Amino acid sequence: QKEVEQNSGPLSVPEGAIASLNCTYSDRGSQSFFWYRQYSGKSPELIMFIYSNGDKEDGRFTAQLNKASQYVSLLIRDSQPSDSATYLCAVNTGGFKTIFGAGTRLFVKA
Amino acid sequence: GAVVSQHPSRVICKSGTSVKIECRSLDFQATTMFWYRQFPKQSLMLMATSNEGSKATYEQGVEKDKFLINHASLTLSTLTVTSAHPEDSSFYICSALSKALSGANVLTFGAGSRLTVL
Image (cartoon, rainbow over all chains, first blue to last red; front, side):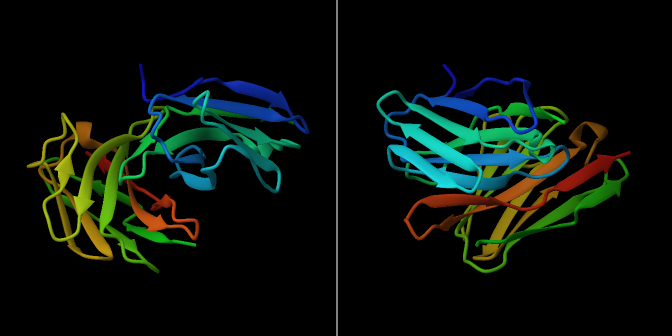
């Protein structure tokens, strides 16, 4: 079992819809959870991180964490074509190492 | 927020030559930096963990003699691809850990360096 799993996609949503990206992790000791966005040919950029159970909102983005289910998700409201990218879920167990999922490709159709 | 600068952004070299890539933390000290490689349409692959003042820790399958890492200061790590060959052509990305106000360790990436070996 991979340590951090994501559906590779592609996930296709129409402009203005809510895009829902999901991630599961295997290490119950994981403490911090991150969502990065990576445009083609560019390096990943941090969207947001969460470390407590529940929801965390930042603009159009909402991260949701459920430690009991070992599940973290990212919701993108009012999706725009510019949101089309690969979204990487990452998990840190409290040490130096951050484990990345393989990423989910998102296409927002205009 | 934390900023990581990476240079050069693009480099083209001849087969057999060596290429150095620099990674700097601009507004924070980074005792630990990470080097990743990414081939087209593939996921990030961690190559090594760079520790200030000590030897780097390489991931399985990464040749330490080919990918030399030096982390001589708290703000600078370098990756040297020695005797580069066309199969080393890739997108190399560095990152550094910084502490968020919450105490969480947050990974910030440099812009990446695209290496093309002819």
